[in-house]
Amino acid sequence: MRSEWGLWMSQAQAGDAVAYERLLRALVPMLERFVRARLHDQQAAEDVVQNILLALHRARHTYRPERPFQPWIFAIARNSVIDSLRKQKVRRRFEQSLDGVPDPSQDTPIGPEPDSISPELARALAQLPAAQREAVELVKLHGLSMQEAAERAGTTAGALKVRAHRGYRKLRGLLEEMRTDP
Image (cartoon, rainbow, N blue to C red; front, side, top):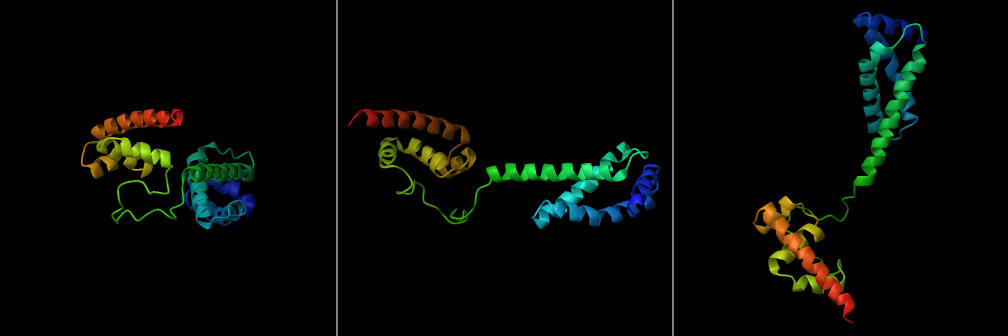
Protein backbone atom coordinates (compact mmCIF):
# COMPACT_ATOMS: atom_id res chain seq x y z
CA MET A 1 0.00 0.00 0.00
CA ARG A 2 2.83 2.41 0.82
CA SER A 3 4.05 2.17 -2.74
CA GLU A 4 0.71 3.64 -3.80
CA TRP A 5 1.13 6.73 -1.65
CA GLY A 6 3.50 8.42 -4.09
CA LEU A 7 1.18 7.59 -7.01
CA TRP A 8 -1.83 8.96 -5.16
CA MET A 9 0.10 12.11 -4.28
CA SER A 10 1.06 12.60 -7.94
CA GLN A 11 -2.57 12.15 -8.93
CA ALA A 12 -3.64 14.59 -6.21
CA GLN A 13 -1.16 17.14 -7.55
CA ALA A 14 -2.85 16.74 -10.91
CA GLY A 15 -6.23 17.55 -9.32
CA ASP A 16 -7.59 14.07 -8.55
CA ALA A 17 -9.64 14.64 -5.37
CA VAL A 18 -10.45 10.94 -4.97
CA ALA A 19 -6.76 10.00 -4.99
CA TYR A 20 -6.06 12.77 -2.48
CA GLU A 21 -8.77 11.51 -0.14
CA ARG A 22 -7.47 7.94 -0.48
CA LEU A 23 -3.98 9.16 0.38
CA LEU A 24 -5.12 11.07 3.45
CA ARG A 25 -7.21 8.16 4.73
CA ALA A 26 -4.27 5.79 4.28
CA LEU A 27 -1.82 8.17 5.99
CA VAL A 28 -3.84 8.97 9.13
CA PRO A 29 -3.33 5.63 10.98
CA MET A 30 0.40 5.63 10.21
CA LEU A 31 0.75 9.28 11.29
CA GLU A 32 -1.17 8.61 14.51
CA ARG A 33 1.21 5.75 15.41
CA PHE A 34 4.24 7.87 14.52
CA VAL A 35 3.09 10.83 16.64
CA ARG A 36 1.85 8.80 19.63
CA ALA A 37 5.23 7.09 19.83
CA ARG A 38 6.77 10.53 20.35
CA LEU A 39 4.08 12.40 22.30
CA HIS A 40 2.37 10.88 25.30
CA ASP A 41 -0.45 13.41 25.53
CA GLN A 42 -3.40 12.04 23.55
CA GLN A 43 -4.91 15.47 22.82
CA ALA A 44 -1.57 16.91 21.73
CA ALA A 45 -1.00 13.89 19.48
CA GLU A 46 -4.36 14.38 17.75
CA ASP A 47 -3.57 18.07 17.25
CA VAL A 48 -0.17 17.25 15.77
CA VAL A 49 -1.70 14.74 13.33
CA GLN A 50 -4.08 17.46 12.18
CA ASN A 51 -1.16 19.88 11.84
CA ILE A 52 0.72 17.31 9.76
CA LEU A 53 -2.25 16.95 7.42
CA LEU A 54 -2.49 20.72 7.07
CA ALA A 55 1.25 20.98 6.44
CA LEU A 56 0.98 18.22 3.84
CA HIS A 57 -1.82 20.12 2.15
CA ARG A 58 0.12 23.38 2.12
CA ALA A 59 3.31 21.69 0.89
CA ARG A 60 1.74 19.24 -1.57
CA HIS A 61 3.12 21.21 -4.52
CA THR A 62 6.68 20.57 -3.28
CA TYR A 63 6.45 16.79 -3.59
CA ARG A 64 8.43 15.51 -6.55
CA PRO A 65 6.92 12.29 -8.01
CA GLU A 66 10.33 10.93 -9.04
CA ARG A 67 11.36 10.91 -5.36
CA PRO A 68 10.13 8.48 -2.66
CA PHE A 69 7.01 9.67 -0.84
CA GLN A 70 7.75 8.26 2.64
CA PRO A 71 10.83 10.36 3.45
CA TRP A 72 8.94 13.46 2.32
CA ILE A 73 5.90 12.82 4.54
CA PHE A 74 8.04 11.70 7.50
CA ALA A 75 10.06 14.92 7.28
CA ILE A 76 6.80 16.87 7.55
CA ALA A 77 5.64 14.67 10.45
CA ARG A 78 8.96 14.92 12.29
CA ASN A 79 9.00 18.72 11.95
CA SER A 80 5.43 18.95 13.24
CA VAL A 81 6.29 16.84 16.29
CA ILE A 82 9.36 18.99 16.99
CA ASP A 83 7.27 22.17 16.69
CA SER A 84 4.75 20.75 19.14
CA LEU A 85 7.46 19.82 21.65
CA ARG A 86 8.96 23.30 21.41
CA LYS A 87 5.58 24.92 22.01
CA GLN A 88 4.96 22.66 25.01
CA LYS A 89 8.33 23.62 26.46
CA VAL A 90 7.64 27.34 26.04
CA ARG A 91 4.11 26.95 27.41
CA ARG A 92 5.38 25.10 30.51
CA ARG A 93 7.85 27.89 31.16
CA PHE A 94 5.09 30.51 31.32
CA GLU A 95 2.20 28.54 32.78
CA GLN A 96 1.63 28.32 36.49
CA SER A 97 -0.46 25.94 38.49
CA LEU A 98 -3.79 27.32 39.68
CA ASP A 99 -3.60 25.39 42.94
CA GLY A 100 -3.95 27.79 45.82
CA VAL A 101 -5.13 30.70 43.68
CA PRO A 102 -8.21 32.28 45.22
CA ASP A 103 -11.50 32.23 43.35
CA PRO A 104 -11.73 35.64 41.62
CA SER A 105 -15.52 35.63 41.91
CA GLN A 106 -15.22 35.95 45.68
CA ASP A 107 -14.18 39.21 47.27
CA THR A 108 -10.56 39.09 48.32
CA PRO A 109 -9.33 41.59 50.87
CA ILE A 110 -7.07 44.31 49.59
CA GLY A 111 -3.71 44.17 51.25
CA PRO A 112 -0.93 41.67 51.53
CA GLU A 113 -1.24 38.42 53.40
CA PRO A 114 0.64 38.92 56.68
CA ASP A 115 2.91 35.90 56.15
CA SER A 116 3.66 36.62 52.48
CA ILE A 117 5.98 39.61 52.92
CA SER A 118 8.94 40.41 55.12
CA PRO A 119 8.46 42.48 58.29
CA GLU A 120 10.68 45.21 56.81
CA LEU A 121 8.53 45.46 53.69
CA ALA A 122 5.36 45.51 55.80
CA ARG A 123 6.76 48.42 57.87
CA ALA A 124 7.82 50.28 54.73
CA LEU A 125 4.42 49.73 53.09
CA ALA A 126 2.68 51.05 56.21
CA GLN A 127 4.64 54.31 55.83
CA LEU A 128 3.44 54.94 52.26
CA PRO A 129 0.53 57.29 51.57
CA ALA A 130 -2.69 55.24 51.28
CA ALA A 131 -3.10 55.69 47.51
CA GLN A 132 0.50 54.65 46.79
CA ARG A 133 0.28 51.71 49.19
CA GLU A 134 -2.93 50.52 47.54
CA ALA A 135 -1.38 50.76 44.05
CA VAL A 136 1.75 48.84 45.05
CA GLU A 137 -0.22 46.15 46.85
CA LEU A 138 -2.69 45.63 44.01
CA VAL A 139 -0.05 45.43 41.29
CA LYS A 140 2.94 43.82 43.01
CA LEU A 141 1.46 41.79 45.84
CA HIS A 142 -1.83 40.73 44.29
CA GLY A 143 -0.47 40.52 40.75
CA LEU A 144 -3.29 42.46 39.12
CA SER A 145 -2.81 44.16 35.79
CA MET A 146 -2.79 47.94 35.78
CA GLN A 147 -6.30 47.97 34.33
CA GLU A 148 -7.64 45.52 36.93
CA ALA A 149 -5.94 47.38 39.75
CA ALA A 150 -7.26 50.71 38.49
CA GLU A 151 -10.81 49.34 38.44
CA ARG A 152 -10.42 48.06 42.00
CA ALA A 153 -8.97 51.39 43.15
CA GLY A 154 -11.66 53.37 41.33
CA THR A 155 -9.25 55.32 39.12
CA THR A 156 -7.74 55.24 35.66
CA ALA A 157 -4.87 52.97 34.65
CA GLY A 158 -2.67 56.03 33.99
CA ALA A 159 -3.31 57.48 37.43
CA LEU A 160 -2.66 54.12 39.06
CA LYS A 161 0.66 53.80 37.18
CA VAL A 162 1.74 57.16 38.56
CA ARG A 163 0.74 56.18 42.10
CA ALA A 164 2.51 52.83 41.80
CA HIS A 165 5.69 54.38 40.39
CA ARG A 166 5.80 56.96 43.18
CA GLY A 167 5.14 54.19 45.68
CA TYR A 168 8.01 52.06 44.30
CA ARG A 169 10.37 54.99 44.49
CA LYS A 170 9.34 55.84 48.07
CA LEU A 171 9.51 52.16 49.10
CA ARG A 172 13.02 51.85 47.69
CA GLY A 173 14.12 54.84 49.75
CA LEU A 174 12.42 53.57 52.94
CA LEU A 175 13.97 50.09 52.56
CA GLU A 176 17.44 51.59 52.00
CA GLU A 177 17.01 53.68 55.14
CA MET A 178 16.02 50.60 57.11
CA ARG A 179 19.12 48.74 55.92
CA THR A 180 21.47 51.56 56.89
CA ASP A 181 19.80 52.33 60.25
CA PRO A 182 20.39 49.53 62.78
